[in-house]
Image (cartoon, rainbow, N blue to C red; front, top):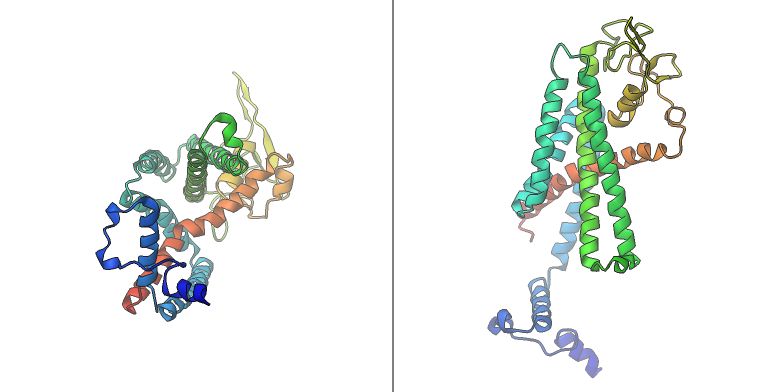
Amino acid sequence: MANHHEHVDGWHGEKPVNLSNVDLNKLPEKERWRVEHQMLHEKHKGHESMHAEMAIILLVTLIVAQIVLVQWKIRHFKSYQRATLIGMWLIPVVICIKFSWWRFCVFWVIFSIITGFVTYKASRKPLSGSTPRWVYKWFLLLYKLSYASGIVGYLIIMFTIFGLNMLVLVKPQTAMDFGLLLLFYGLYFGVVSRDFAEVCADTMAAHIGYYSTTGLPAKRLDSNTCAVCGNEIFIMSNDNAVIEKTIKLNCGHIFHEFCIRGWCIVGKKQTCPYCKEKVDLKRMFPGPWERPHVMYGNLLDWIRYLVAWQPVIIGIVQVINWALGLE
């Protein structure tokens, strides 16, 4: 019983400290940590009911926000898409500026300048015949870089957990930090570039005229024309012949292999660019080494919610707690 009372009256079985007379800077590290922990306990003593209210507010806000986001996406997809893209693009860099994480800011500025120029070119009307190829090449490069960065980062984290970092004489903390950095960069730039690519794909396809989000296309598709880029599939001339790999979808329409892959993987489309019939991705990507790209794309769609909307929801919860006087 004595031990029990000693644990209750003290802090983890130790004599309580008079916190008002403590100079933390003069204490050893272990003692300073113990005193700071005790101060935290003292600060939140008797706040159990307040913490319960805050947990309920967080849970209710998450549920309501999820319902609102789903309904917004169903009823007004274009505005939801634009708002998500703006949030994905701006929120992380604002957080990094706040905490002075300048390395990410440098990469973000480089990405924003090049992607902004590519998006500008994709929105021009009339559209140059070579623009779709260059747009898809840029976003496909970003997609592959983000995929490689994410995989390498994940492997480094796994190797560090199993202690394999010691084989190359790297400290666990250094290896873990590097792995998390690569994983974050891969996921973030993968998500943002796919969203920009989707906007560019819609804009270019609408300008070319063989695709429309609603209703019938503005132009009739010729059998020798690729509806994604608007160029001829087989170009024959007296000087030379340009022969490029093609893919024929279930609906019978033929496209350049590069174009339709860019349309489906990078542009996040799973329908024919002309007739909107659903594309059989398993048939189009028969190789087992290609299917992970589709799975990775689905992962990026899930990450988007965490990066774009989770900080907004947490901010709303903080405002509600502040308004109710909860700490």
